[in-house]
Length: 464
Image 1 (spheres, rainbow, N blue to C red):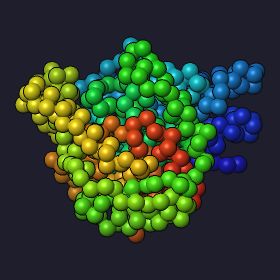
Image 2: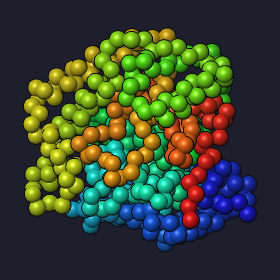
Image 3: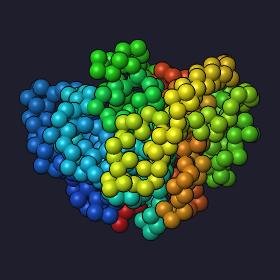
């Protein structure tokens, strides 16, 4: 029998619909995988094994009786520990909140549970999601399963979600992305991650990092799964007014249209310097592959701030917005906070209201400048990360690996990261497909075409 824990969301959905297996079988396979590997990998804050089994039994009965809720009924998932889940602990990655119990459930979690998905547990995050390396000083850093000898960066802040997926403990996990926190862990763990447009998915019930920039998104093992989960997670929510301004998108009808006739922009030479040779080799190969599929590869028009310059301003927005929200913890020297995260948040105390307002004004100008640069092209292609996953011993917490992703958040764009190769040392590389805000369907279409022409998304880490 097929190892159910290895199947993607769309494969599980098809198998459940055809009654080749039951939700009880699927949840049991995932929980067995968690029991075997979680002690080493530390992806989960909490595993809700008993509740998941009961939900699987209920889903099995409902489907058998003709009361199925749709294609996701009986499919397991994991929630990043930023999402409120009524009656369960939600720590936000903060050890000081280890006993904090949610009194309501986040809107997007309600949508997924309402579609019949089964929550297996809550996954580790960088404290308050403020960090892209994936580390957590007090609650533990998940182990990137692509190297079981040397502990490497899992990517953050959605570290536990990515590790749980890569290790085949769960077929889908929630991520959030304020500066790269979906795309970087997806990239370093050999997965697919979608950074959505602001307002696409409700943030109600997601512990805030930067209300201006926060975007929830799916992390999966295929582009099709990202498309399916986007449909399930999106939609208007009166509790998040931003969702009322962006009409829903259905990427599934256009997913398989291919890239013939699309104009895709590659980075100018001035941007290539921040990526190492292994990332650029995989990137250049992807450009050739997309060209062979019929896309026209053109250079991104020069002019305006660099990716790095736009990305650098993201930290000012984040720190300005998170400091007033968490000042009580950050300013209390006795509170148990991650040293690096405390320092990042405290930056906000020294940013004046005028400086904050000025950065937002710069952002609006930069958005207009970039819109002119991409006039006539459908997407911009870059590597997702500057390097492959680093050993934890090589991390400098005063720096960030998000320079290749933050600019996307700053300019209010959407982006897809997907596997596009392996380094000689056996670590995943990743391509970032950046589209205009609201154009997730196009990013997914481009990603699906590349995915079908390669087999990188099928690779899995070898676990003992």
